[in-house]
Picture 1: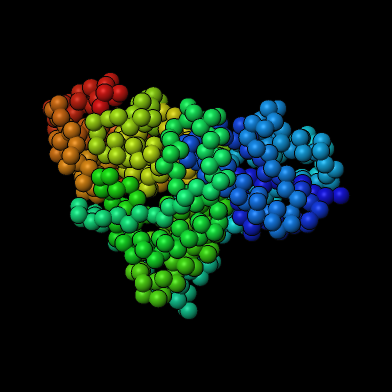
Picture 2: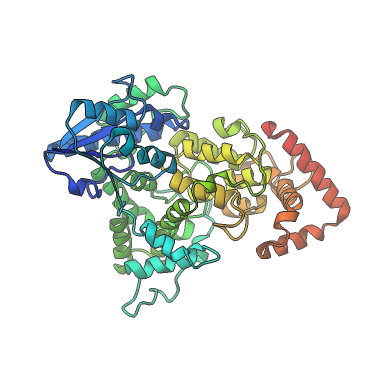
Length: 509
């Protein structure tokens, strides 16, 4: 009797643990279901990417001789969830057990945990070994630590993988982390090297029609969709990054320039998180480029750190702390999300640039997310639930395991320091240093007071002031609080009044 092997939309990898158990007699199920496509209002690009990639992946499996059951979106009105899709398949086929690789979201995990009793069949949930660090390995690392700092986890992963390590187990280049060399501001006349783009296949054309029909009210447009939807094309896109972009990525990965949304970034996180790329292969290609003298150590190390350090770390933290983690709101932030997060029409140039490119491409790089849209949400005390839902909906690479710690923990400090040792709060000076946005802004970046003062400035000082009871003893904020105290009572009162005016009129900024 055959097994039913369930593959989710972010598991489109031939190396998937459940696929390694597949025989020609087994049934492989992929389904485009409403509950997964609409639990937040996902950007149209994300839905096109996943539905098209799922259909291409199913076609490859069929070519390899596997028995695939594929359920198109809307083809069976009663199929609203993965549970419904399995129920439909079991009616059609005789199945002895259900096999699935562990999923990436706690919400879906709870659904999967009910399958065995619901279907009265054994359900095997296999470890997702596409990740380098298993959940049990992360839990063991975290078990005897008071603080879970990524830097120390990253060093463990370097030793575990051997990436950029010398024969005597020391880091290549003499230090673990070259982050200080990854923060250069771009010269204003430098030109981005855009990522590789792809023409539509017939499958993608059909998916775009479907998305326009069923998801018309979701953010984004489909006319400019040009992303890879197969593993083969995703690998081409990544090799283009290594050969053309990586050399400059190292120096300028934190930089931002007007109307240059990609600069030297790979955008391959959307492919990796869907299963179209393998993290080990990616890191090996980057390491090989460094060994061949094609890129600097800060470029290679900076990229590898994001993959085997940060990405693996936030996944481990997510599963270690859920479900309570999602309920955290340490700074009691509850202000409604301003409308420009959904339409991009704001006089703040940095926000306009970051949000507009997000709406256009379902993409923004990590500094735009952390230090522009995330920083503004932190300073303004925007609702943690609304802003985390926004990040989850709007980005093509967003899944809750990676999005929630990055947003709730890193950007909003809503976990009170579980992930980050301090809030990543900054005034307009940081954005001015790392971008050319401020030069053409309606507001004046050097002013904290006055009608045209940069909103980030007064909001920054007010953020520190109104959260002094919870943040005042943070060791990494002592200089900031010292500078706030030095302003004197009269200036402090003026800044508080300015900040309150800004918060009252958030929608008009």
